Image (cartoon, rainbow over all chains, first blue to last red; front, side, top):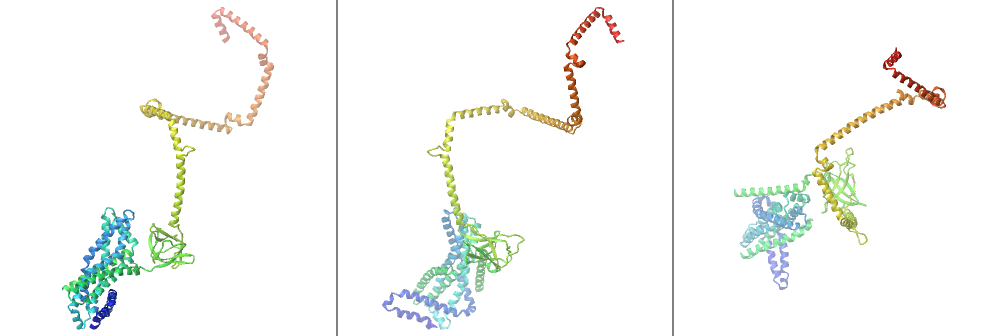
Length: 273
Length: 330
């Protein structure tokens, strides 16, 4: 098992030493990242039967991923919803159909901004923490120690996090949606050039929205959250070198996660239409 | 302990999230998963317009199902309508596609049908009606606008006129200009008259301003009314009289309507005529009296003699006269 995880970087190093191959290095690194992520995923999936025994760890990760992330998600969603209402109200003020602000905010939050914002905050707050924790464990050879004790890190460190993010993302997303909707309703009522009653704001939302729109957002959030945690675990576990590499890994993990969220967003949205 | 608290928080958090998802689901989709599958009926249209899967099916405005599928079937378009199990659709009910506003949402509206008709079976086809498309209506409104514009142009032409003939406005203007003096005089007179009326001068003024005159007028009208009533009763009696005459009662009636009386009258008139003829011919005593001159002369001389006798009597004194009278009496 130890040989499996340490082999690929060595191989890569041997490949990349030759000069002509320097040009394709970033490309290779992307492929390498995708490959190692998939390997980590498969390995974690192999240990799913051990999940009930790791219930304590699962709960701990749920707490970190869900419970402690909620306040920032709520605050951000509130203002996202508010600003959406404000901007669409500003745009609609000259056209007329102001009652559709409710629908616009509702759909935008449920289908797009709710899941994306939840995932972005997850990457910033949880993804960075995961990458930092696993990178330091790797740098200080705790991972090696685990492997020596025949405890695969995919089982003990990755699987509970992946399970926890799957359980928590829908909760975070629905709260993000609702808080965003209410934020929009408040702004729509108290902004002088919009001033729509919440009843009419929510009526258009109810009339033209379906639970399918919300479900669409929840599915997207699950995919984003899962991808963010997997990528951050992978980058953390693949950190090599000294303590300085920990910081570099965190940066890489967050940047990769953000790019991944937006790229996935397009394809998942298209696939779910 | 801390571990247990953490677990409880996570549990609560998770349950809260699930509850919120459920509430959202119930609010937005009305708990569709738990709903019965209902039954399907088919509605065929020339065109489905904006109708798409998932649109409402409403009866009298109440949602009773939705469009399960849309498809082309030969030369027409069909919509499969899923209706809630407990909703009954009458056989003579008809479906129509309503386009809801300009943004293009549509629903199928089914009317209530008649009370006695049987209910539609699952899978049966409902009657449909085609309504004009919003675009057709818009086109018609456009035509109407053109017509209206033409009509308005005609009206404004009549008002404004053209180079050949002056318009209505011009004519009125000319009329007013030409007759300005007359008009102002008429207005002044009117003013004078209304002033007089206001002051209570003249008949009209008094009529309007004097309560006594009004009372008199009322009394006059009352008199007229009673006179009319009397006239009525008079006419009624005249009528009854005429009726009696008609029925042959009374003298006049007999005279007018009784054949025998008529004959008698004729005979009397005929004999009267013969008498008068005789008289005029101087026949008989009366005829002679009237037609004979000698008789007149005789009468005159006789009267003269009588006069003389009376004079003589006057001379012999009133006693003699009394004696004569007494002689005459006893």
